Length: 117
Length: 115
Image 1 (cartoon, helix red, strand yellow):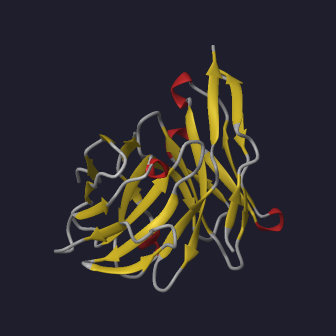
Image 2 (image 1 turned 90 degrees about the vertical axis):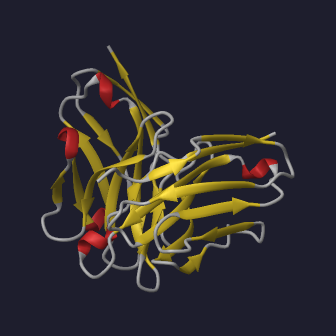
């Protein structure tokens, strides 16, 4: 169990550029979540995958954001035409599937910190 | 709507002193409650969780929390703080959607430990 891995750890980009982040969940976890954390705030839910299916998207996820999990393993989060307001820490979490309380424990990666200049 | 309130933005505690971080939640059903800790530049590490049963739950690093339904609270405690406990602490409630839970977090409490 190597934990949830996120790459890159830091990304600096200019306004208007596209960026893509990657998340590798814990290997046996089929549920994957993305959250966004801005300075001085707690993380806010963005989207949820069960296997390869994206089952829930927050209204925070504008049309410029797209997330995929093509084979039910790693996931990518892409932001197109970045804006300064997109500057934040993007956190990925994963959990077990199925029934039971263990499915409700989310394990987080170290996050990708995005700075839009 | 679900929400979590952490009324203390910063708390400073002397090393060796006891600690209590406050958390109040708003949720229409029986809540699943969590405390996570975040060190600078790091992700979130789960300290402890409450799902049901005993309202006093034990976690890692000597932390415990008590669920009080009547007060809608889930305060985090530690009897003796170590300098390595300096970090940001987040309380969260698991909010059920269709078949999964999303976590709703408070704004966090930053713990400073003085020598």
